[in-house]
Image 1 (tube, rainbow over the protein chains, first blue to last red):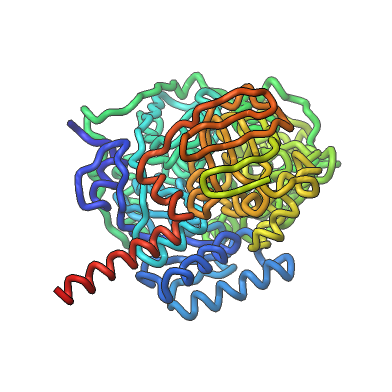
Image 2 (image 1 turned 90 degrees about the vertical axis):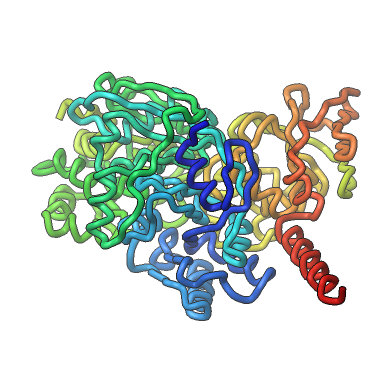
Length: 414
Length: 177
């Protein structure tokens, strides 16, 4: 019987052949912690032992409340800096940007690795063929102490997308369409394997957008089989890996098929990520704030798609637009290629790389009754501020078109 | 209201499907790291009277996919001090792990008939829930043995510590043999 990618990686990490449904204790290749889930993980670690299991395998960075926006946040940062120094682990501190972007762009994640992060969107790293999953702080603390963690080997759903996307339709529209189709718990505890010719032709940035939102349908991980694009991406980062990894033909999985050419720009309406409709259903709806950024859509490719529409245009009166590149690297790329000029010329605010308004705990907070349009991943009640605010999720192009028009707009009309 | 390992009796706070972790504890409170501080803001946006009116041992009952979204362990931690047990038709996977890890009891059961304010008695040994208000009985879906072991230890840290002690005792016994 053949194996899925998830089964192969977990078999390798557990040191025995395992299949979906098995419970395993598996060796962790890389562990990531950040400023808001890190403190509890460190507390757990020191309840168990007095050292991290392997200082070379732990990476820390601050991105949720950056630079520190309250005394409480500053204290968390201080404690974590002390921890990183004591343990000798790599600490990117506030400098590099959103954890998931940084982990992949710095080459910390390789195909076939088992990676955990104390953040639900850790599933993003599947874009380079790793089994990556978000865990809570106690799980992370145990992993920091022992280098191991228990897993239930997940079943796999293969999402096969074939065909060519139409103009102004993007990976974000694909993943929102899929989530709208299967529902907010449609992939609970499943490995979500994205494939098909559309995905094969995608760059790593867009694959990251797909894998990032696997958790929004309950997925344990999102994953794309590594290929030539993965090899080129990682070679640019001077790291090597196994690019032959893939699910066997006869592996047990459920396959769902989608046709890219039939897809249109979509939005997820308040207050649930699977509340997905074509953008044409909500055209002309009032908006107060547009946010482009996050681990879902804050990469250079996303900023470029938005800038294409914003070039020579201005953000409509009465609308605030906030652009937050996902990392320092992506920020610099956008600077050098003139994208930041386009944004600032149009009247958008460009902020330094961090999670920004996505988690509603720092800046860019929505007030009561306000409506936000966001390229991030969640639109739950109170997610971006007031419980009486509403958030619509969309692609960077839809966000840019809407910022120009001052209401929710179809990017294909621009 | 009582809370022992196997028997929990309490009043129901009923929630719907897909209660996300932002609803359980909003992002702005993630700077707080203690269960006491977090408990003051539990369900603040969706059930503003919860934190002030919850009585120790009360029971949270929900539909499908309880705890979806962010991996924040602050969510089960915000409930741990006051909530005797969370009963849902199903749980989102990270919340489920986090709750078991920190020793917050969670069980899966068909919750359709249970109403806000009902008094429940949960017998974890027998795997039964008695609805004392409605005079009804429900069966809890059993967890795999591996997860039951962690629950019985009181969470993942005590489970790991017990196991380490067991191993070192075995090692010592081998040496003395």
